[in-house]
Length: 371
Image (cartoon, rainbow, N blue to C red; front, side, top):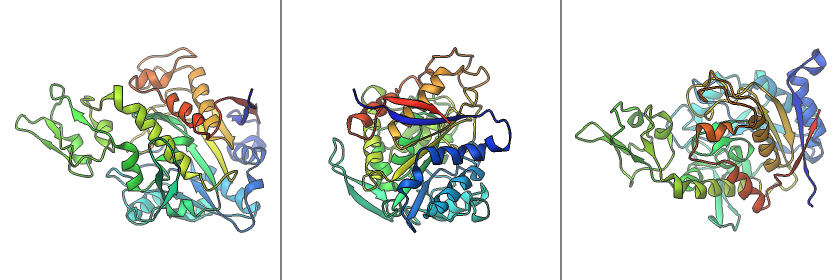
């Protein structure tokens, strides 16, 4: 029997200044041993998500500051980083992305570290990484992530319409890839169910490739030759009439995503740490320009050096919690119910965890240790 991966947790109850949220983050950094792999004067990336404009569920920059300070104390030189989005929005290029980051509080005066767009102005700063896996022999990873000596991956755990849920693995996969890598991971064919389309044009307004138009009957139609599979239309459609072939396309998508996560850390063996916040667990990703009501009560913060174990633990904690009625769940759900498949019943996100374990990224077998 293989040894269990260690996942550390700090629940949210506090009894004074020594147990406030900042202290919890610092304690999780320390107990997971992140300082041990940060070399003197090493450039250390803090991979995070600053949230789309209009979203407020992203990790607080005040808490990120605790990680910055710990990296500096360990001798490292930290910088915050993320990549530009494939879809149109407030983070589609480096200028708008940085403006959004600053508007959301990720300036040096709060975080103590600069924010660097890892794939450059328009996603051109990337490097090929050899992975030799089923779907990809090589993957494209943002240059300023590849070049980091070490990395701390800070994730907000939440639901996701195409991945089921998003945590550390998704943060690595989509979050560390430039546009060319995001396109390679998606590689999906979207279509419109005409009988349900109400002609609201929400999809046409967000499509970055102008691949969606209205036909003679004022129904949306997607030009497959232009579609890049970003899925933004799927997210904004109020009637959910945009879809893919969930039976055949979603499992390969999850595997492609995991192979990119593998590539994001391939040159940093034993040099990556993970902190995941299982709070404000929203139904959708922080990429959407709104934040829906949480689906479960706030749970706590996690840390680990195993991305598979920390995602599995976060998933298990959400499953074990009671589902909130005043949320996208539609009703109160008992503890033990899979909240993510209840909302997104066409995708089982745990298949990504199984594939990540299969290719050697980590273990789903973990020991949860309370701080």
